[in-house]
Length: 110
Image (cartoon, rainbow, N blue to C red; front, side, top):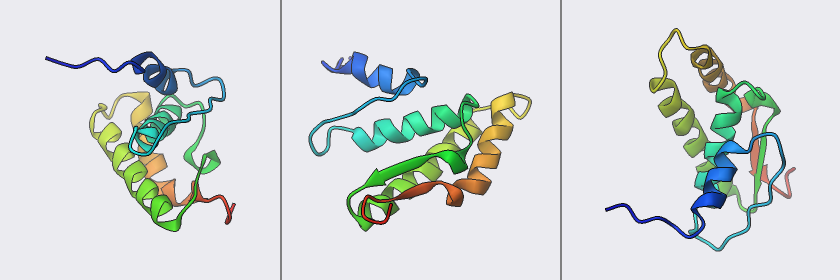
C-alpha cells in the first residue's frame, strides 16, 4: 500500500510547474535535492532550457558534488526511459554530453 505524503501536491508542482520560479523550503532529508534534480531533468526533457543554462546552488562542495552526480544519473535514467525516436531523447543525450557546462556549485563560488 502506497503512503501519500501530506505535501504530495507541492512535490508534484515542483516537477510539473516549470514555467515559474519556486522556492522550496524544507528540513534536512525531506527530499529537496531529489525534487530539484527531477525538476532540472524535466526542464531539459521538455526542451524548456538547455542544460548549460541551468544552475543549482548549495552550501557545501560535498553537497554540490553529490548533486552533480545525482543529476547525471537522473539524466541517464530519463534517457534510458525514452525511445530513440522521441524528440526528448536527443535533448537528454545532448544534456548528458554537456552536463559539465551546467553550474552546480556552492553559493560562495557562484
